[in-house]
Image 1 (tube, rainbow, N blue to C red):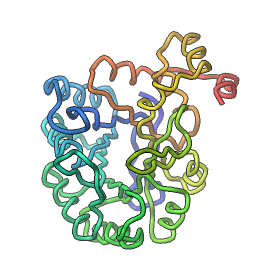
Image 2: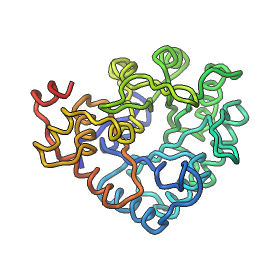
Image 3: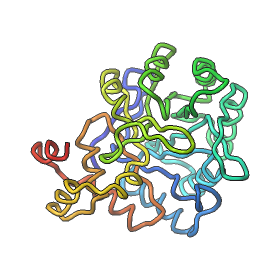
Length: 291
């Protein structure tokens, strides 16, 4: 496993994890809904990831719904002491599989309680407040509810997900932001507009995260790298005898010591490939070329 990174290093309860985590979202059925196609493989992926040294898992109760949380508990409970389970709140799913805000203070509290119950925990070590665009609930009201849950001891650290630079700056004025989770990969560094809104890119907040010692957790890094082939990525990947997906993970690990990639997959073979990417060493010249 690769080097480590510390979440909330200046707090009373810092969390040190390996710099290559695992995102559970792809363990669900089609459209991030329902049970996995191969439940036994999903459980094996979780166990093998942790056995290989992965100490950071990303999940959410709206994956499935509750599917990934139940899989995590079944595969890994009682949890290893070094394992950090990060979940997200702020959204929910409708029966038509659409994603909608679920971010009023009472809804955020209900989500936290649900995550605690399904995961079998007394405290969630890290929770990302997932922003769902402009809406009737102001950011300060959402974050205020999260910090209240932190004071109650239900949450150890609070992070933000899907945030613009202005939103991160506003959040930092309100309280300690432990982590940021934004879309980021070699082929997807800027804000992405789509039918359901926008996903702010990691590039616009990375320097701010570095300045404040906040790990940036890239999501969808592989999903958006693969369809948008970059001849430079392909060339460097061939030179190292690895896949373009592996090269993308290596690029993230080299780009900044404050990046904590969480590539997800529903296939054990791909998990092993992703973990192997942590051993790829890129030269300064290769990184400059990839830029």
